[in-house]
Length: 154
Image 1: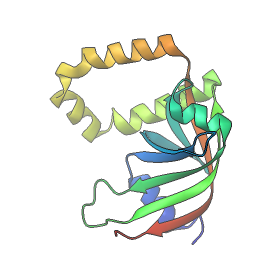
Image 2: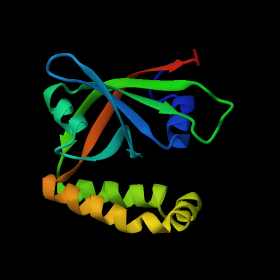
Image 3: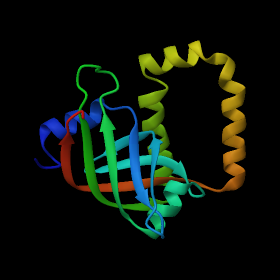
């Protein structure tokens, strides 16, 4: 199966969280869940430059990204995309990514409903973003998939 296959693209579009698997400079693996959007043949994962995922991508750009169909409890497959990633701190690209993520996660019907249900957490969310901004700059992990495979539920 190829990365640009319709089934792969549909699976990615229906997923809500990407889990990026990276390796430290000692070869220790880690998996970080991140929000994401697609842009042409790229997948943009939102994070900050001080996070473990961003630091490890800088050290080793070869990563895997895992997707699940969170909205479909019947489909228990996992899609694994493998390829190269780079950190992008360009303000124009980060703004474009943030806008697309807002449309996907906040301004969608499910996103609006979720924010209304969890309205009391808004001050905590603002505090997190303020503290995050003090630690470093927002960035995206620009992932370019090269290989893919569906993993069946074990």
